[in-house]
Image (cartoon, rainbow, N blue to C red; front, side):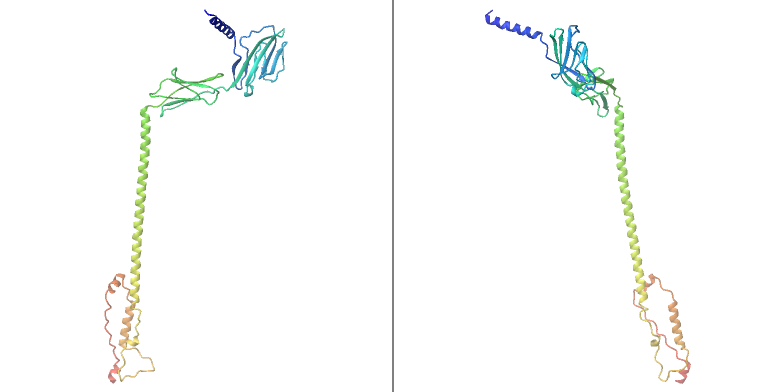
Amino acid sequence: MSFTWKVLAGFLLIFIFSTKGAAPKHIPVQGALDHDFDLSVPGYQMNKSINHIQWNKNGTRIIQYQNSKVRDKKKESYELFPNGTLKIKHLDRSDEGTYKVIMYNEDGKNVLEKTFVLRILEKVSKPVIFWSCINRTLTCEVTKGTDFKLRLYHNGRNVREGQTVVTYRWDAKPNGPFTCVANNSVSEETSKAVVECPGEGLDNILILSICGGGLTFLIFVALLIVYISKRNKQHRGRSDEELEVRAHRKTSEEGGRKFHQVPGSAPQNPAASQPPPPPGHRPQVSGHRPPPSGHRVQQQHKNQKQRRPLPSPGTQVHQQKGPPLPRPRVQPKFPRGVTENS
């Protein structure tokens, strides 16, 4: 073997032995929010030779144990035990940080140093399982927690994994329980459920019932619209008939009024209708003399004509078709005395 290979092998051996017993400088630890947490020193056995224990947070001393007494406690939530364990009560977000423990013996020699990085996590809530028989899906979700994982099991077999929400879809109706597990570094919660869904036939019956009900409703609405439109048409027809009847009556009444006004428009003068007296006749000035018989007949005829009832509208319309017929002139009868004198 050449000198170069010997030197290289020596350096490798020195590096291996120097890193073999080296421990990590920072130890990560997690605590649950709103819970107590014990920060213990791993691999340490209580020794009477240890006389001084000191804990620092982010480079500042927060508590120490010396000569069997606890001193310099910065917070009431801190508590230190003789074995070096630091207890932090009711963790909150401000307790996160880097913690370092230092131990000395009676001679003041540093015999142990360890550093921890504390992280505060929220515990997971209980998983909630729900399913939909129509969509054939099962869902598991968690509402609270920090850095948790979800695992879904069916009959003990892992079927889904995820964070926050996991969804599983089945083809055939599942038999057996489902188990949903949520966990993180500080907590774990489990929920179980058995899926119960009606048969496929019942789902089809439900769908058909809904469709049938909707179709029946549409038919009812259509019939109602047809009935209302028919009724409106009938109402309009009756109104038109009533208007025609009223117009016909009005026309008949106006025709009857015109017929009565024509004969009465020119009243006859009885004096003008009488023939002139004979040449030898002298009018009597004084004394009241009864009217001649011809004048009485004409007056009676006129009174009877006035008392006669009015003809019906039909008769009036019939009489209006032609011109009025001529009436025979009544010859006046002279008194006996006048005839004898002539």
